[in-house]
Each structure stands twice: as structure tokens, then as C-alpha cells.
Image (tube, rainbow, N blue to C red; front, side, top):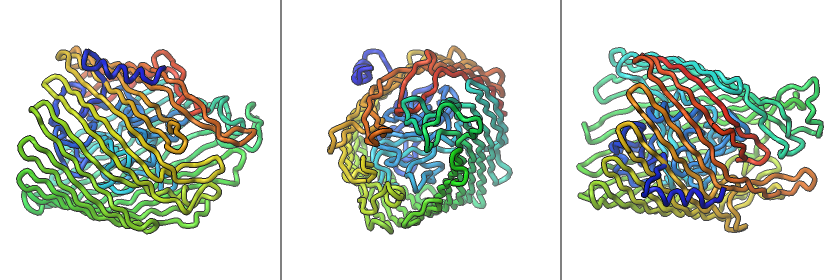
Amino acid sequence: MNQLSVLSLSLLLPTGFVFAQSTTSTTTTLDNNDVIVTATRTAQKVSNALSDVSVITQSDIQNSGSRSVSDLLNKVTGVETFSSGGRGKATNLFLRGTSSEQSIVLVDGVRLFSATTGSAAIQHIPLEQIDRIEVVRGSTSSIYGADAIGGVIQIFTKKPSNTHTQSASIGIGSQNTYEASAGASGKWNKLGYQAMVSHDYTGGFSTTNKDASAYVYNPDNDGYRNTTFTGKLDYEWLKGQTIKASAYIGKSKSEYDAYKFSMAYPPIPADYKQDEEHSKLTQFTVESSNTLIDEHLFSSLKYSKSQDKSKSFESERPDNTGFFNTTTDNVSWILNGKINTINAIFGLDWLRSKVDSSTIYEKDSRDNKAVFIGADWQYKNHLLEGSARYDDNEQFGSARTGRIAYGYKFTPTLSARASYATGFRAPTFNQLYYPGWSNPDLKPEKSHNTEIGLTYHPEKLKIDWVAFRNSIDNLIQYQNNHTVTNNKVKIKGTSLSVAASLSDSVILKANATYQDPIDKNTNQVLNRRSRAFGNIGVDYLPNEDWTLNANVYIKGKGYDSYSDDMTWQTVSVRNAGYATLDLGVRYQMTPSISTSFTVENLFDKGYTNAYGYNTSGQSVFWRISYQN
């Protein structure tokens, strides 16, 4: 598909086409009074946000037809995600052309990431556990610190409800896929509680294909299983004074095709045993949330401990089990004050990352201390936001980041905004110390992000347009000679998202992004990014019991690279553009019971996101759910 096809589609939007996902998204209404907390770490209406944001509500998740966080995020403006070989495999996350390491993923306010790779294992977070997702595009380092060059994605898991509720669901689908979940939530006197467990299993398909290295390719099915538990308690011991505790525990087993020392595959030997990676994600949090001055001053003191553990079992090397365990301790204190139309925030952050691995690292821990301030102000038609942060990193010294944004409301339905922000990213432990593939002299990445935007929101229509430019100095990249160096990249682009309520029962939604993520040293497009991509979707609600939806995902051509088996040189290869169609239907059988059926990739379109790795063909899934 021509790269400009998606951009051309976006130019048609004002004359009749609409794309999902708009500035905020609901399936049954175009209300713009939703609240977002991720953009400034304080609550604000989406209509007043001066960042480029998207909100995915519980209603969106239920009616989207998506079966993974990756699939759901693919429908969001400016986001590209895909896994390397199917469900549960390593997932790439590109936010406005930046890499997984250049964006932050939070789960209930706590960062999810591996200190060795720098990326978040979103492939292990089941949708059943999620209540809401907020996406902020553009640098947010002035609030969140290192690695927020591309933006922030915050996942909110389900929370205690005011009345006792219980839920359960089961599902079955293609590739021997089975899912089940059960949970309970409620309040007893002043104690709120929530607990939920979910289990997923799929037989999967072959991770790799014949384009992969002959030392890796193995045409077997690579399955995946995951069991996740979330639990929350909150106790309001006095009005406005609450103690909260939460736990997230996820264990998974993912089969994959490991590197072999011979080219004997295929055929598969009779005594072959599956290559597997066992992973465990844990997160424990305690928080004191306090109202100090009624309606005017609020405090939050939070401690969290999270771990990302993985252990590999390879068929050819049973005595060489490799493991990577990273532990992150984080203490944060936020003081939020409101005076008339001014909302101010002050915060302190302390974070320690530690690595325990079968691979010996020259250094295995580092601390980061930070202080930040921010404020937003509204006066008549004027909106103003500003924030600044100072980080003191044990390895790299100090870093100062800031952001300033201004907005103006021409009318109640038309507004404009502009912003400038700086950011930085610290090299990962792998990039600094992994034997044979590292460089201890790497410099932190530094970014300068500029953007302008327009939002038009009459009663039954939402249009959001943004143009952005992100210059990144000291970009960290791997080279052909197994070294890591600092380069430079400039990413510029534009996005357009629209949602329109055509009637009480039909909502059309769409988005389109055109970007130019160019490596300034090679003048080439960065690997696995597309210059153009987007969605066209429709929700049809004939009555309160039925919801039908369709979504077309369109992705322009991109480029990837691989290492030639004979020369060991890196070769660039082009991945063709493609389009896929997903369909879904949901029926509310009774007030407590609903059922849904989805078809992904209806026309069984073959396509490539990562060279040498397979993608799923047509698949179907049926689920029945109970909640009371």
C-alpha cells in the first residue's frame, strides 16, 4: 500500500470519513467532560488539557473487540504496536515514532519496565484486569523524568466499587485459545476491596518463518499461558484520609524459537523439547492519600516495589538457563493545591533499579532522585500550563527538563494549543554493560518536542488535529559491529482524529497519522516504523442490548533489518503496507449476562511487521460474561 494512502484518507475526513480514536473516546457518546490525570499528574478535564491525549474507557474496552492491550492501543492515534510472533511474545510499542524505551508505561501510577531492556512487558497484562487507559503523546519528562520522550501510557486496573459486585467470564477461540476470569469488588463499612484472577492460554502459531535466520527458524507452534491476580484495599479512617494498598502478580510461560548452534532445524529432532521463557511481573504499592485543607490542598505519599523476572529454557542448552531479574523501588510524594482557577503541584521522586542476572554486569544498580513542580491556570478564554523537573542520576549526573503550553478557546467548541517540552532518556543496563553489545560511554538522549493543535467539538462531532516535531540528540542505536553509539534523529508529523455521531445508533470514528522518523546520520526511516497508519471504525447500537462494530486498520510500508547468516552483515529489508478488517458483536442477554463474538483479520491478510516473524491470520473468539 502506498504510504500516502492513509494521509490521503485523513484529508477526506471533514467531508465524510471519520477515524477512531478521538481526543477522548466513548462508544455511545461524544461527551468531552471526561477527566484525565496522566497529563499533569493531577485531575483535569480533557477539554482543558493542553497535551495530545486519548482516553480509553471501560465501555470502549468492552465494545472494541480487542483481545490484548497491544490490539487495543493500535486503535489509538499515533500508536503502533505489534508482537514478535503472536500472543505473549515481546511487543514493540512506538508512540509517535519513538521506541518502546522512549515511552513510559504506568500501571496505577507505578512504572512498569525492565531495567535491562528499558521496555514494558505489556503483552502480559490481560484486558480483563483493566478498567481504563490514558495515553499522552509528546514529551512528559518534566513530570515523569527519564524515558518519557515519546509520551506516557497509563493503565488503570479495576478498583473497589461502592457496592458488592461479582464477575466471571469464559472464552474460547482459534489456535486452541481459552480464557477465564473471576472477581469480586465492594465496600464494607469504610473498607473498600477488589480482587480478580484471570487465566489465558493459547496454542499459538510458529513464531518464526523461513525469512528468519536458519539458526533460529523452527516451524512449530509456540504457545503461551498467563495467570494474573490483582487486589486492592482502601480504608478511609477519617473523612478525606485514606490508606490504600494494591498488589499485581502475573506469571506466564511463552514458547519461542531460540538461537540454535546448527542448521538442523527443520526437521525437528525426535527428542526436541520446546524453548520457553518463564516470566513474572509483580507490583506492590502502599499509599496514604490525604486532604490537608478541604477542597484546596491534597497530599499523596506512595511506596511501590515492582519486579520483572524472566528465565529462559533452551532445548539445545539445558544446562545454560539464563535469567534476568530487575527490581525497582520507588517512593513519591505529591502535594497538589488549588486556588481559584490555579492548580499547582509539587513532587519528590526517588527510584532505585537493581539487576540480578545470569549475565554479569559491570554495574547492577542505580539511584535517581528528583524534584518537580507544575501548574495549570485558566483565565477567561486563556489556558496555561508549565512544569519543570530536576533529576539527579547516580550514573549520569543531573538533568533538567521543562514544558510550557498555551491554549486559547475561540468559542466554546473551538480551541487551539501550542507547547514546547524537553526530555531525556537514560541508557539501559544492557546498552551500558551487556557483554559484547554495550558501550559504557553512552550519553543520555535529549529531546526537544514542539507541537501545535486544534480541537473542534460541537455537539455530535469531535475533530482533533496536531502537528509535532521531536528532535532527539544522542539517540542510542546498535551498529553492525556489535557496538552501541549515540546518533541523532528528527521525527516530525501530523495526526488527525475524528468521531461523529450520525444518529442515536451509529458512531463513525477514525484516526490517521503521518510521520517522518528519520535517522539524521543515515537519512533512513527508523526500523519497524511506518510513515503512515490509521483506523476507520464504526459502532452500531440498534438498541440497548446489541452492539456491533467494525474496524479497518491501515498501515503503510516500513523497513526492518536482519543479520545475514553468511556475512553477518546487517541487511535492510522493506515490509509492505497492508490493511486488516476486524468485526465484533456484543449482546446483553440479561442485566447480568452478556456474550460477544469477534473475528480478527476477516480476510486472512498476510503481512509482516518484523522480518522473519509470523503474524496471526484470521481468528475468531467467543466469550460469555457475568456481572452482578
